[in-house]
Amino acid sequence: MVVNAYNTVVPGATATPALDAIPLRTRGCCQPVAPRIPGPDAEECAAIFRALGDTTRLQMIHMLVEATEPICVCDFTAAFDLGQPTISHHLAKLREAGLIVSTRRGIWTLHQLNPEMSPAAREVVALLH
Image 1 (cartoon, rainbow, N blue to C red):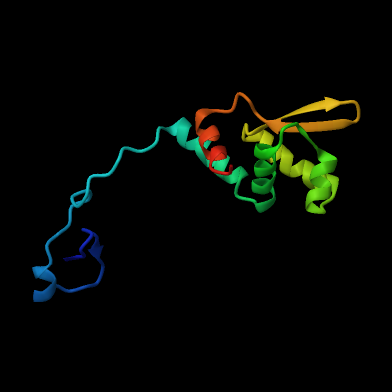
Image 2 (image 1 turned 135 degrees about the vertical axis):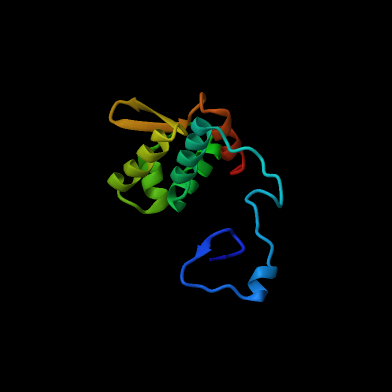
């Protein structure tokens, strides 16, 4: 039986003196690593990064960071030269990730950064300023 450097049996391989000289490796023996991010925190961070993984949504968050007032869908539509359904889709993704909140005023929907966003989200958004 031949075992490679990662302690995996290599089917059909025959032992050679060169392979016998390679020391077997033990998992986790080279460098200590930080503990994993706790499950809920990792899921939240992944959702935030997925939401910001689109150029349009990233730009929208940047615009909201810089805005002094909530931004209307019509303003986003003009800024990106995209249709209202597409803009609304992007805004829904940002809302689902907890990054923005929306308020209706008559027929208009205004959007702003979520004042109650999580600390993790706040740190990511701060990078866009």
